[in-house]
Amino acid sequence: MTRIDHPESLKRLAVQLRRLPGIGPRGAERIALWLLGGKDRTRSSELASAMLQAAESVRPCPECGFLTDTAQCAICADETRASGPLCVVEEATDILPLERTGAFRGRYHALGGRLAPLDHVGPEDLRIPGLLNRCRTTPAPSEVILALSADVEGEATAHYLAELLHAEFPRLPITRIAQGLPAGGGLESADELTLSRALSGRTQMN
Amino acid sequence: MTRIDHPESLKRLAVQLRRLPGIGPRGAERIALWLLGGKDRTRSSELASAMLQAAESVRPCPECGFLTDTAQCAICADETRASGPLCVVEEATDILPLERTGAFRGRYHALGGRLAPLDHVGPEDLRIPGLLNRCRTTPAPSEVILALSADVEGEATAHYLAELLHAEFPRLPITRIAQGLPAGGGLESADELTLSRALSGRTQMN
Image (cartoon, rainbow over all chains, first blue to last red; front, side, top):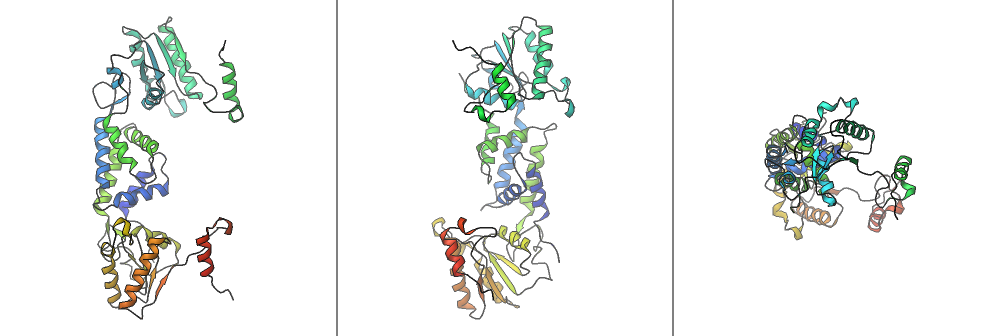
């Protein structure tokens, strides 16, 4: 008795789909079957062509690391943006969420990761030379804002960068984004570390 | 001030990804960014090639409609399977779930859909001639089991097929899979229709 299963190429497709973030084995099978369905069976080719075209054309901006399909990204190309404050983020994908807040109109610099000794990510793996170069060029940034994760590796990266920048540019203000209660979050649902940081980061109201 | 957004080709990829079952706008963006990431940037091309290869090689079995990448599907090619009972399902994707129960060792026939007048799906859109042909050939099936959905359209399709088959093959037994409580389901969580069908479909225990 043969055990009945999907054809091999369908199973290989499901294996590839399982690598996608947020897709489990069930979802991968469901998507694979959907891709092979449809009246004119063009679903696979349409998605594949969009993927290949995006992979071909989207590149990190050589200046800031943001994703772009032109020589310079839309942020770096925007002359109306303040060249004063420079916001340092871990990943290029952190830029749009910040941008959508509308609270920042300066420029960005994506490091392409953060220091993670356990994963063998050291300073040489990050876009730190580019950051230093941007601080050296005129007009120099008026402030470097470190918008890194609020976890151990984000902290370590922030401290490393702050020391490095302060050594070369002693009069450049270096700031970090605040840690505290998330919007809509009550005290009862906040963990101790968040609460202690919210306390120590308190701001005067009067 | 220009509104900053992802590059066009990345947005087009996200639009394609949103068509996938179970993927929302957030998930599509996350997957698109993941596909463009990775150290050697081969994620897009690997997935695209698996998709194109599967779309190229996987076809419905000409006999039963199950998905196959060979001339005849693994079920139709299996000489050890009973040629007696024939299980009619709506979609080819319904076959594996039934197969995984291990409760059925006969053959299948996938209709490729079900009667849905509102979606302009009529009998001529389903693989009904193939089903009739299989009932005409020797050895004829000993029984036709209708394993269709327990909803209005599944019911309508089952009644239509039962009448059609009975008219041409009056001595062929035609059965339907049972409707009732799902395994592990309590009475308090079952809706009225399920309960009424479970009641009318009760079986004797002694």
